[in-house]
Length: 232
Image 1 (cartoon, rainbow, N blue to C red):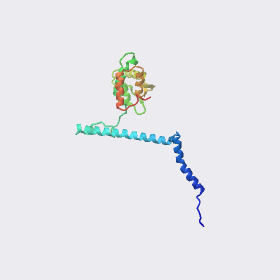
Image 2 (cartoon, one colour):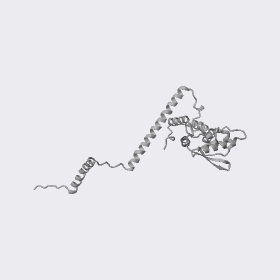
Image 3 (cartoon, rainbow, N blue to C red):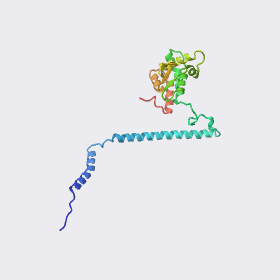
Image 4 (cartoon, rainbow, N blue to C red):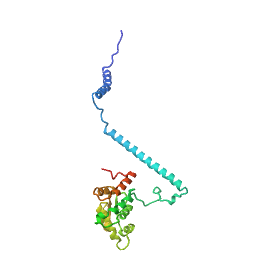
């Protein structure tokens, strides 16, 4: 007597279901169906990966520029003693700040447009603005405890040094570069520095800046990869 083995119905059904799944997927695509959208988690992982890649590329460019500059410096000054340089990377050096690389253009631009806030009177408030950036930390907030000292840093001497300092701060405030609050040390003791690019873009939209000046700043911002002037 020959015995015949019968396949378990459950296994057969599972096999049929498994085999049908791919064909059903193909049929869905042939019928105009679309594959399932990637999950939010997958999308987040993809974007995170792109961000890491971009950061690596930027770091590689910075490292390449540094290496190139060091080689060129060594070629031009082969006997240079680095102790004669002020290097931010030297951990023994203290007392530095961070500011936009376009600051020289911004200072000159402020001097040019200060007349807009003074009714035609020339006010070199750009030097005052530079003093604020030389005193600010990464909070965008400055305390002026001694106005006479700050005025001297800006190049204002004599009996009217503090008066001139305050006048120039008022110009910067009226143009929108800063905001001020009074304190025990005076009416301009606490100062908030706004993003200068955003302020300049707003002033340009009002027609208060010469286009040649704005174009020069725009070009330099592109060169240093600053996107503030083009952000929505």
